[in-house]
Image: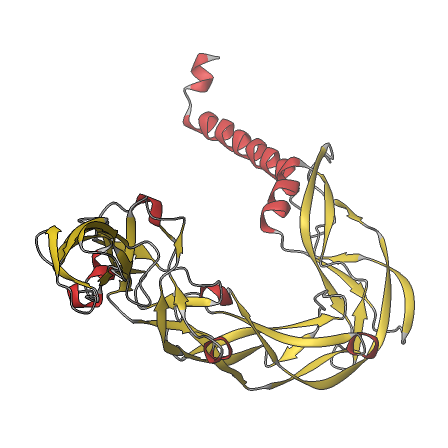
Length: 414
């Protein structure tokens, strides 16, 4: 036997037999068919694989008709040998279609079919049948409405003044029943951060019914170019200082004024027309202990988009109660006829008067404005103690107090 295997022709014969067997095995696994159509495989059909989202083609003159009810994709299950199922699933070199060529306008129930799946495979389509509606195609022109997105997020101080599309009209094609449902044709533009006039190209155009549902139609052209004009209207508005609570006791407010009289306000023109002033946040006077300059935030309304300044410095001047002495205030009197009046206490016909109040109230009052007097009348000669009458100037604040050096004076009548 060993000698037989040592012969070259024997080795060649064995190699040839092995090659033939290998060819048969490979042909069996790949379902190779000979030229006469004979299946060299032994028919292994144990493998099944499901393909999702297989697109569906429509066989119909779609320039003349519109069809609804056809799903965009279906599920296809392949059954056959492992190699052929795997190869077909990987390449997906087959088509699923619905043939509507011989059907007229109306609603029909039709079966889905396929083309290009090898004969050695079984194919199952889900769904197997569908209900379709065929309608004549219609076209109609519509104006394109523009809707802005994030309008409140436009650049601070700016607003959309005008917006238009080019082209402003598109042609919508679908069935008449769908055309009749159209409520609005619209394009959406995001204006976030926009601070200058800008043209946005190739904005998609959408079609909606009156319920806000988007309709699947053909739009020509499918996009439009939208120009957004923006502006930033503003106005200089006076600043008013707001306060709350009261100053501490024995303290008076002299003045409270903002260093800047006006602030630039950015808002809609309609709001600016009726705007009279911008107020500050209230200043708590109960916390004020001395004259000072403080920074206060402005309190604009929600219609204001931007302020030239968010804060303002406010000068606050206050004063405390003080005392001031007016010297040598004259005492008026009438001397009886033929008699002489001499002042004993005080020794002269004048005295000092102390004022107590706020400096701003006392600043305009001097000794000549005060009136002191005594009534001598027809008193007999000798020493007399007489009360001093006091009259304050007109329009003196109620909180201004006066204290006389002497409530009574002693005079000697001779």
